[in-house]
Structure formats: structure tokens, C-alpha cells
Length: 114
Image (cartoon, rainbow, N blue to C red; front, side):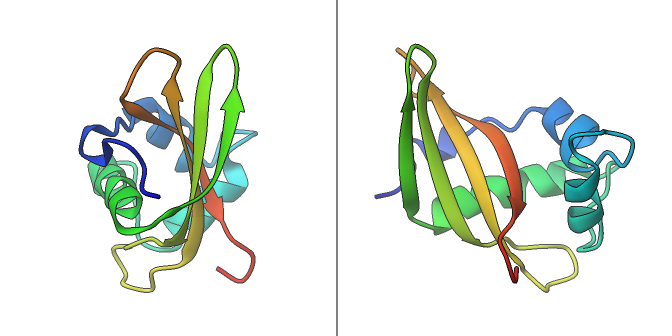
């Protein structure tokens, strides 16, 4: 199963620049170290946004998790295309809100050994 409507997937700028690539974020610091080490940068945050959207198109959903009344989580695992070309294995979580059909990024993090 693929993520529904991956071509419409939304990756909010703040999710990348204030979380996934933010070394000062208490919750995102470890993720930031990981993603920055593969060549992603805050200045070029759209590169990471496109890579996450491509990840959703390239890989199958490995798990779904219904979260009433919020919506459905879709978990996708696989290689993420990175600026340095090393392409680590990551888990990316998307949500489609109840009553909507547009996926929105929740989080991304390395898989063990990724």
C-alpha cells in the first residue's frame, strides 16, 4: 500500500527548520545531528522537504495507526535520498486528518543501522 495522495503531501517549513534540522530543539536535536550529517541544511530546507515527499512516493506504507479523532498515521520506511548520496534508512510518519485526504508530515527519524 502506498501513501494516499503523495503528490499532495505537505511538509511544513517549521517542521524542518524548527525541529528536524534544529540543533537547539530539545526534542529534535538528535534528529538534527543525524539529518545534517547527510548534507541537509536549514538554508536549503526545501531540499529535505522534496526528499521526504519523494520517500513517500518511493516506498510502501509499513504500518497504519488510526488516531481518532485526529486521523490516520501512515508509517513509511526506506532509503531517503540525501544531498551527500549516502541515503540512510529512515522512518517517516505522515498523518491524514479526519475528513481530509492530504498527507501532512508528522516526523522522521533514523532506523537502527540506518
